[in-house]
Structures are given as structure tokens and as C-alpha cells.
Amino acid sequence: MCLEFSGELLDCFVIPVVILLSWFFLLIRYKAVHFIGIVVCILGMGCMAGADVLVGRHQGAGENKLVGDLLVLGGATLYGISNVWEEYIIRTLSRVEFLGMIGLFGAFFSGIQLAIMEHKELLKVPWDWQIGLLYVGFSACMFGLYSFMPVVIKRTSATSVNLSLLTADLYSLFCGLFLFHYKFSGLYLLSFFTILIGLVLYSSTSTYIAQDPRVYKQFRNPSGPVVDLPNAAQAEPSVTYTSLGQETEEEPHVRVA
Image (tube, rainbow, N blue to C red; front, side):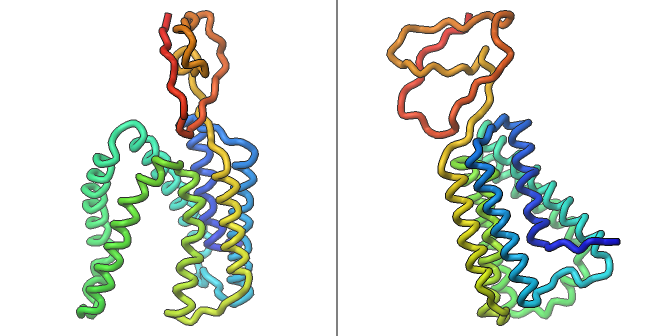
């Protein structure tokens, strides 16, 4: 028997994907307050899904519901992978290079996808200045999204950005109230403020990076003498943690033995 899941809740699958990849590949460590904020945000998405049911906005009326659910899960997984790689690239390489490459290869592969899958629908479009203006507006919005996304990820993290994107469905809903006359429910406002509370909780403290003490160990005494690190054979196998936030004090000089 096929279970019908809400599209909004399936979109939340990107959150654990980003967390796991950030933990194992970016070595980011989270505190209890971060997990509490994430749970609160997901509860907010649950409120929005419940509001959709109450107002009759059922999605997925097609026959292949299981295929649709699996595609959403696959898309959320790949989107989480791309966000984590984006964070790694902009932190270690260049944001300008990232934007240039994603623009070049994104246009190339999107063009191939358009030619293969949507060329017939594109030919059926009754082109006029209004439709052209809508395409230009959509392109401008996507340009702004992909241009500012690396800046926000570099200042925060991929997890924080994806938690913030949970409110995107609510913004589209608020626009749909005026454009498409969607039915309104008070649960939508409850969902919005619940997600905001979760974001505030998550952003209330910084995450940490686990680093090898033989190379990256931090010393909090900037005025002290030069500290010698132990040899690799004598170093403890455990890891140390350094905050991702900006430090107000200068780092001491470290000499590797």
C-alpha cells in the first residue's frame, strides 16, 4: 500500500541530509540548541501541511504517488549534497569562480534538459510581451537567489540556509492568496512564526568544527609564548572544537615540532 506524504514534509528531508553531510565531510558539530531549533522548524512545516489538509489543498492527485514521493526524496537528497559542496567550495576556493562555473555548466545542462523534455511545451507557449515579462522577472529572481546564496552560506551555513528556505512555501502561499485566491487558515501564520522561532533558536549560538589537534589546535592566550605542539606519535587521537564565529582576539603563534 502506497503512503501519501505531504510535499512540504518531504522537502524537509533535505535538512537531515545537509546535517549528516556537514557532520562527516565538513566536520561541523552541533549543540543541543541547534537540534531543538531544527525540530521546531520541522514542527512548523507540519503545521503548514495540516493547514493544507484543512483548507483542501491536496497535492499529488496523480496515480503514481509512490514514484512522485521517491522523486521528491531523491531531489531533496541531491539538493542537500549540492548545498554542502557549495559551502565547501566557497569556504576553501572562490565564490566568484563558483558562480561562474555554475552559470556556465548550469546553462549547458539546463539547455539539454529543456531540449529533451520540454521542447514541445515551449513551442506551445503563446508568446507575447506579458509572458516575456514574466520570464524576465523569473530569471531576475533566480539570478538574485543564486548570487546571494553563496554570500549567505559563507556567513552562516548550508543548514541555516535550508532552514530559512522552509518559509519559501509560506511566501508563495501568501502570494497565492491574492493571485489565485487560495483559502486561508490560521495555521499558516502559526507555521510561519513557529519556523521563525526555530531559526532564532538555531542561530542563537555558533556551531563548531572538529579539527586535528596535531595541526589546528587553538590556543586562547595571545600574549603568551610560542607553544610547541607534540609530535604526531604523542598526539591524542581525539579532536578539538573551534567556533565558527568571528574571534575578537588574535591567534597566537604556533610552531609545529
